[in-house]
Length: 368
Image (cartoon, rainbow, N blue to C red; front, side):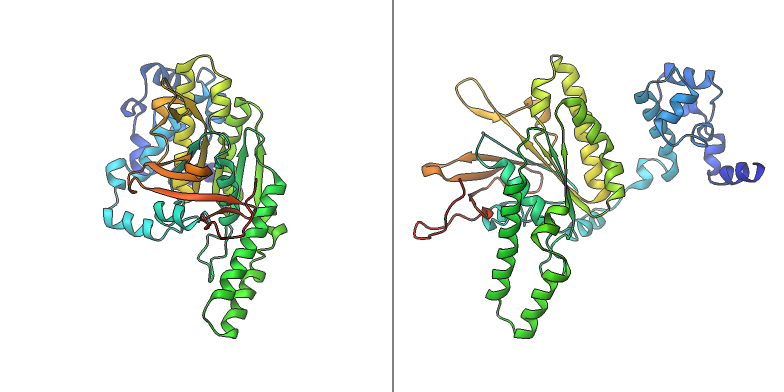
């Protein structure tokens, strides 16, 4: 026991041995609760408590949220304070350039998104019913699995959080078949030797890019109410840690339960802000893409606007508004982004999934 205690002490830096809880940004009430139970220094808290629930057992008067704030404040010193953890813009740029975006299989939409849906951030697709929001979500669940070798994909897995019951396996199977067919067509169109073509074909086989394997790598969580949704998202970091190949999390839709299950708007705004902050942290920590599907609401004058209000408008890094154009065409518009211009692109939904708009002369049959 003495050896274990010494090892535990050695894992703490010298500043933690003497750093008082009085210097941490904690409320006087929380600090008093800790000190009443004998916690006076940072190392007192961190030595035997890695989870909020463990700290609550030692200090029963703390709430789970308070315990989480305490642990966060104590851990800040493990890597120094914020200024010591600064990175240069050059380092950040290099890291961003190494990311592989998720293609939508529509070249025009990928173009306005800078190559596709980016990892390390939240991308929101919002629009009226039937415009193709869920179709895009399922398409990304398939395209995130594209092989790295030869096809420059993420070769990852997807977590699909379904709140509305919109996810359908049959439709996803259609898209998996379409994705496989699209890659095979691309291989045949390439100007390369037969030997190189065989290497591409072998790449598809060796990466198990079959329809069945594609469906197996999509993990679906069905959430029937807001408590299930919040529990699912709280569990998400642990699930991603257990499944390190996950490169995409889709929440379809983020608005459904928040619009129906809350009467207290202030409480809704608070929980929604915390939820989106956790999703952003998940995206950045694990370098994965988070895609949220949002509904549309009618404003005075008949104008359609994204649901959940103005406070939620800043939650996503990039917001893409989907709408209907003339003669039944669909339009994607980058409404908000810190790195992308406000541009439009046309897309269509075919039996194979999301694709570029084809000319009228084409005989390709649209999915209805």
